[in-house]
Length: 249
Ligand code: AMP
Image 1 (cartoon, rainbow, N blue to C red):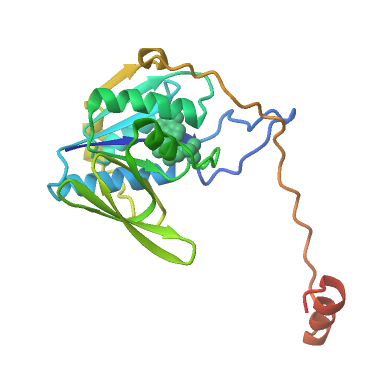
Image 2: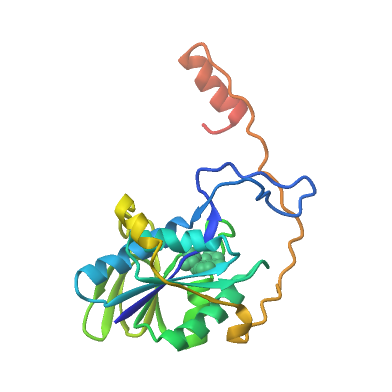
């Protein structure tokens, strides 16, 4: 069984994001970009299923500019077999990505698509769910455990107040949560090997998808600066301030 893993190129999670002076968006100039952390978890899960003999091939796919090839190479260096770049320099909203992924699913016929629960740049948490709806496939979102059986997959989901396990008929969509696994680091030999693995190049037009944004960003703003703290001289002063200034006691 083939597993498809969409991987998005996003601002590295360690970077302090700056808003552009005109508030039109986030400044991407000279900023370190990496694979979306939830997508690293998806690649890791797919690789573990392959290593357990439950999958035969892991294909990574990214929708984005030419530089998204680096993101694909990261997935290939972790152990994925091949990549697909759907090249575009335009902003792609989750609906456009989901429609493109639907086209890839129809061409590749994977048994499982493992998607990150959200991309840390737009925090949309929509692509996996939209893909599931477009394909009419079952979905198990926010997975903290994936147990692949014969024709089914049990997905343990992190929900408010606990865990829920759902059994899905394959083919299915799973979206990954933080506690599913700890992604591996790519070893140097595997980074070298990844350079030779194939990456197929496509465009949104190849799938007949109109990626024109449906949303308008009205404003992007930095969070308010945190006020400086103060040092108190005694416990009684602390209690007094909590009671009479902060009003929390
Ligand atoms: P979002 O719905 O934007 O929060 O993204 C959720 C997940 O969809 C991500 O973790 C990726 O697995 C996938 N995804 C979203 N955008 C892209 C993209 N441009 N290329 C590849 N995968 C994507």
